Image (tube, rainbow, N blue to C red; front, top):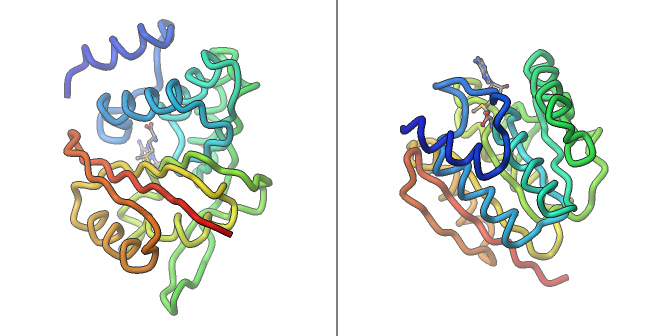
Length: 205
Ligand SMILES: C[S@@+](CC[C@H](N)C(=O)[O-])C[C@H]1O[C@@H](n2cnc3c(N)ncnc32)[C@H](O)[C@@H]1O
């Protein structure tokens, strides 16, 4: 990972007063560049992300550059949510982002039990971009699997999903599970530093 790549992205976005970066937890620069480019090019209006931090700040800044769009970030850790909120405020981006403290609660999907974000505070029906960078993998097997089954009902008919860390075996299995269950979706794998799975949702109602 090159620190210069972070600096270049910060310069592009005008985030020159420091960023909430932690080596093991922050998204890698190539993933950040990918999601920022998507926001700047496709101009999604309702972005939901799982796992707040540097991604939230950069997505919100990209929305500000577009003059529209909003990032709803689901964060299970109250302290981490507060930290991300303070970074968003420091850069004057409250208009473009809400960090929702969403504790992990029990959910059963296809007779398997998971702990996943409590989305009761999420009042959107038109998600057109979803970024998945949580919950952390150590919590359970297939930690990121519930994102699609539990958020599908809140998505627009067309939605682009970006899942970080897709080079890991656990995330590969998650993508395979989605592929089996959602046959009207398109999957693309990008060999980024940690791998990225892009899923295009296209539904006809
Ligand atoms: C991969 S991190 C999310 C990173 C975020 N998208 C970013 O780019 O900065 C997933 C989750 O791990 C947790 N987390 C982040 N930093 C942590 C740390 N230093 N120690 C423990 N948990 C952490 C937070 O709850 C976060 O939502």
